Length: 274
Image (cartoon, rainbow, N blue to C red; front, side, top):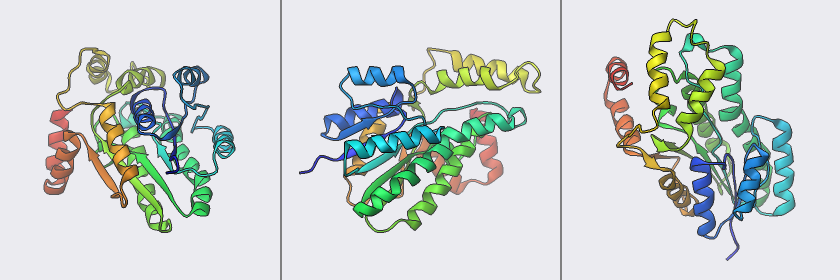
């Protein structure tokens, strides 16, 4: 059988790296991309086919597409995984901060997908997977920018699925808590983009920062990134994958509660949980 090839974004760590490693073991040819050259070199030393791809840059996307076409004539799948969190209250988010959040989490993913679509249409087949989140359908306080980007991803994915011809499958995965560097990176982003001292939420931020920086934080529902990789493999191998797949108990619980509870009841529940 012909070896299946997949392009994955955000492979320096977490879900991207775990998925790249798992799919390679399963016989896939994996283009494991990163936005930093030092991470590309690390992956190359580990035996991955890796090259630069910063989805916040149109120039980087164009170069990556050229690299893909140079390396293969048939791309089986695209996994839009790259993303990060900029935490902060809505009133503390500047236009520039929102732009930074959206450039990577959704604008880049859509531009990359659009750049790949002609290839998929020519092949008359292809798989597109978006890495959304439980926060793509349930909002949480102090994560509005991230949540909004994932809500947008859900909308774009739904429209794209309705627009694509038979043979091209579009799927969302919606993980809840997963063991990655997302909290560590979120803390760095908070310090970079949010003016904590002059915020009306300064006291709450102190507690929030303490939680993000607590290395021994344990979440019973938090799954290893490998579990997401297994789900991605299942979607790639399924003849007719579903539009959405929940991952983690938290996502299933929140999905159920969103259907049966009123908005006010959900607000109270999420406020207490947060």
